Length: 465
Image (cartoon, rainbow, N blue to C red):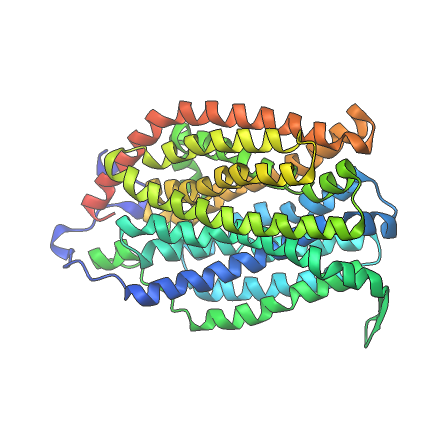
């Protein structure tokens, strides 16, 4: 590619201005940053997922059906999480990412606590919108920072550990729901100072939102890293316009958009099949409160353990395969879809809760590995002047499709196709099968175009873009 066709902010610097390559930040400290960002991701996922464990009580309290409940689980959160994320990324490519993320953590934690004060469907809907707006700061800032903290041969593992927050947050939310929520339900409504009487489900939102304030304060110990490509060339940090980023991505749509659409299947699985899993266990196996709490906890431990293995193995495979193949990241995603399909499709058909939970092992492994590989793939082919914006576009597509299509597609099938709440398992099966096949086909189509994008990105690095 010639310099004339590069984005405006990616024009190569004068060779005379290129400096000696400075060292990366101290790696012990860099891994500390990963841990802090991991904790933020865990808190984010607990705050967004806890609502899935409170479905019966929220439905009864607010008088809503499965489809309305699915909007609270997905659509409300996604409205600002997806659209606001692009604006956040534009600022992240220009300013202090640590400061932006700090503000986001505090905001979404307070919004989660506010969910506990809602007494109507519209109020809870708008509180969930606010949670999504705050969490929109997380991935564009965190992933861009990690790219500047780690050399290319370690960034896959760093992103892998960071993305363990997905399965860990989901698992911890399940454990909290299984251990703590039955106690809150048994105690019933409680009169809280200043806010009045809160139902058990409302109390749950307040309790899970509060720790985020502490994580936000912990983030103040993290330093904003220098942007590598600009430090190496001695140029002033620049950022492409949002329109230039759109133009760049859509011109290379077979590399970017196919990848985005394929991996949006992960989000549909997580927010469709995953979000309805607690209700699947309750409705399919007619569990008592004690049994339900027990299997929720088991699900939580399986999610944490399998998720950690999945993201670490996925991150390691990313670093290994990308050295051998230009499309190594996409190969990891494609292989993961096999585990994902087997696990989730078998999960909903199992005759006992124990067998169903066992099938969550391959399902979680298959879902966890691409969270690292997908993010690493976008980082690998995104120009430095638009990296946060490309990351935001990636998560925009994943979450717009995942949140809007995932929970609601399952609910619509249950309410209007099968017409029976007990048929939830078959709604989940249909969604899982269609998504698995579609995602694998799109990734296969993407492979050669991703290789071309990787080769193009090497020319930018060589030119000091």
